[in-house]
Image (cartoon, rainbow, N blue to C red; front, side, top):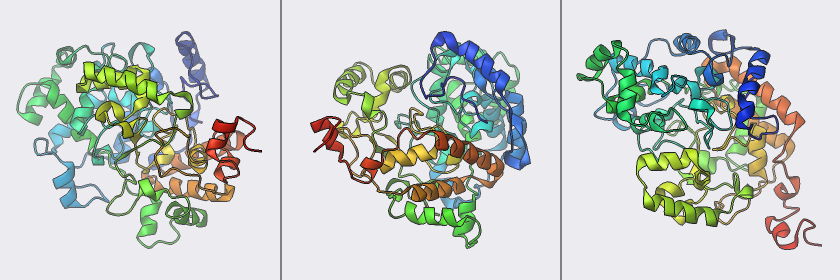
Length: 453
């Protein structure tokens, strides 16, 4: 069982006063997660903020990726890797990767010494934190779910709203965010780093100069470029092994590319292996509790006052303006409530889903899309009811679980069983009347709960 420390069973958020006691109770209830990469089982949540202890994560990482590779990863064209995904000023080498790995696991990057990159991007939890929203220093909760860093090197932009253009830029922002890692400025972060004398030599070997904040971002990005996981049953099926995925998953693939219309935004093939269009869409997540027009007016005033990268980062993590998504970055009306199309690789490991973690299972995700999302004035025009049957939803979910890298096969199976059991108990986003067009979205808005008679 995978436990989410700060999210109650009904999906709501715990109050600040209850979080510490809840964490202690949850830790006492933690059990071994049966299965993981390399047939290993481990206990979750005994480190700060509910993460696996960092030394245990590093042992697991060694089993998953071995010694870091600077060659093009499996499943990625070598020319594309070198020309698209590797910046000219940060070509990977063993020294840079080693430095980045040390920084990734170093709690000194947080002001109170409790949070590392690996706290919210925990190797044992699909390189996420398995929370609806992430927890930073002083038990503060942000506004968004932490996306996985698996394959993040291949994105065209970073964060849910694309506010960082590169992996290097992304790595630096959480360190200076008051809710996340909390250093007031780069100088404070570097003072903490420089307390470890080993860093002097490591930075010199990696970049030929003394430790500096830009190279912190470069080094972490170099390490994260080793976290490519694209060797899944789906890939073996594409290569001609007809038995690599189940008949249900094969039916799900046909639905994915057809009736379910998933491929409209999540096209996935050898030339686009992540299953994302790298664009931003309003699919109605959280729309039922937002007045987007009013929120957009407040957001526009905020970014006009200060719209630099660090200010945007604070708005996204600290305030309810987070729900505006891409609009805070682009200031374009069509981007209100729009968030990045996430990758589908290893998606079985990274619940809960969406920017606010409100969808707890892939069945919830399918229910959300099946009914046509949540109606709002900015809903993407491609979001419409799908009329999927229950068995068709099961098949699409079966297919989605075939996208997990084989190194996490047993963890993937455990996650499938966990989600399946949860979905059997509750399907809060299911609405068959909307999904099958027995009721049209405008009816309740115009006529009230009784609909048209």
